[in-house]
Length: 249
Image (cartoon, rainbow, N blue to C red; front, top):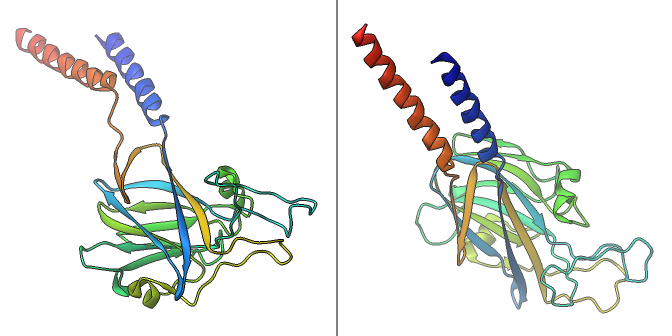
């Protein structure tokens, strides 16, 4: 009995390790546009069906250096449109209480650059800490100081993650336009494209699932593999058998 129980526990631990290694990753792409009054920003709704932790990695700055002929020049055409854009991402987390628009009262955190304008936050609702530049480069960022990357823990509930060009204020978020803002290219770049900026956001976790529909990202717990449930049933069966033997004795 003891030998079988030890074997079952060992198998259960192995299955749990396999389950936790199944990281779930979701990448979403978007584009911000230049308008007469400034630049647009995007709002991604995040529905946390359970409390949990995950990583966020932004890729937005599509070209470095000053020109394609410059030594050390790098480019990352995010959406394959053949164009290189320069979006200096400024990202914000808001609590979504169901009211229309974004309000300063619901602002939870801001992350602009890696380890710069990305203050550590630790409250019962949200915990956020910047990742390192090496970690931020894992998604292919070529300007990984400007492309934010961070680890975040959220309580169950509804949130809004805002992607904007630097620098979006609470008043501008409430007004729906990054007022007076424009996209800018590195000095000396030939024929820069400045009417829009592309970006990619990658969400990843070992313990959470991500599903996207429209602009809503639903975050849920990764279900245990069927074998783990079977392991639990086996343990329950052992308990019943042990109790029966005790009664007979």
